Image 1 (cartoon, rainbow over the protein chains, first blue to last red):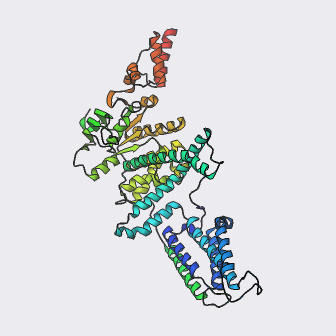
Image 2: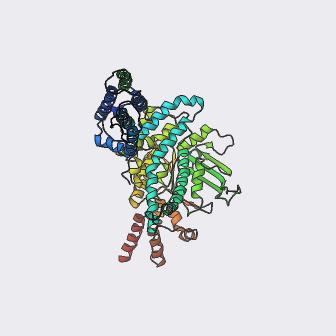
Image 3: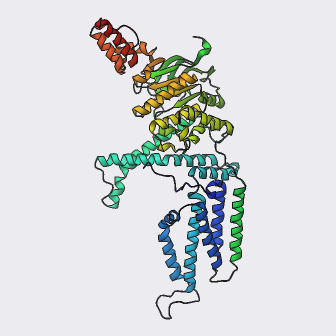
Length: 274
Length: 293
């Protein structure tokens, strides 16, 4: 369990890894918008190409990215089938009189949907989860939400909660394992029996875990007070986020890409979404 | 003892925890008076529930005394009109390292954790950098600056916690059973760090412990029992009062016990140095040489 890593961060030295995390959050949002702007065949071709280019320049192995697509295969497959069988259109592919009617539009829809989801997952993965440490992400979110402070939204508190959560995930995972082993040593059984029995078997794990988590919280808050913590006011940071030309350039590229997609929507090759 | 040398001055401190129903429990600390000088290395001994941890938490106002007076660094911190700034200043000057290393590390990267205290003080970035690097170097953890704390050993985590405290440049550090959860090598690492901070950097150190061998390393030992200060003296003076210590549930170090028993057998061991193994070995060697002559 010591080897547990936070999120899916994949350490590598690429341009994308070095981007300012605040820009990466914005780029992710823009890229998601791009995937939804896409309507034409050429547009989707460009989108898929861009996703592949992103994987290439981020230096993250293709299999790692594909691994994150795997849990979503069920959903993708389901929408694919629904699109094929339930879409109505003008070009009927199956012969007249068959009980199942499949239209060409249905297949286009299904393929486009698949490409869109693929680009969506790759885009968020490459811009955020694979290339940004959770700590950086927390800092970025705090920084981006700073304007909300004027509306009395406790932005600093949220960010602090997020980073403490990240800090304690491995500690509590280790603790859970310890408790489970202790209960197993006394004959507890977590792996057999009906669903109800298994759920009940979890109670002797959850109660000690909660008690210990609360005790930890008390001790941690004492320790934080001892180290002069008094909220976000007047607090400085060791790591300050800095943006440079590279960040602005990447922003410009993604915005231009979005504009390009819009233009390509007008190219009438193949099927265009309505 | 010159008055200006006194750093912590406690006078008739009392403290009671409140029960769930708001009633006060038996007092955890009663009429506690003590003076601690700048640069002293003081060990605080007592068995569980004796009030030693409560005493420590009063010193930086994590707990507020029910009555009595406490002056730290010339500022009376039990005043009614104490400002928030004065509290922060007190906590900056009196740092604290706790028992469980996991429950005092805040950040997911070692150097960011060390920076947490100084960040709260609102220091400039260059100064933060300087203090973090300096603190990590002092505890010998520079090479782990970018590591995740949960991958470190117990002793290493505790050293990071110490670095986090010394980065605030306190005058005094309180170790609240900081070695209790560590294995012997981790305990050694931490004790060596404590001694280094005291000897080389002149920090006032309070080590709250129930290990006698740790207490033997200090300049002065306070024994607390049932919320009261029972004994106050050098380790040799304290460990000479073996029966009294045993009466309150404390055992003297093994080497001291050995000297006591040899004396009980009628062997003349002259001298006071009975708290460290080296001193005891010297005593026994001298006696042996005399006997063999």
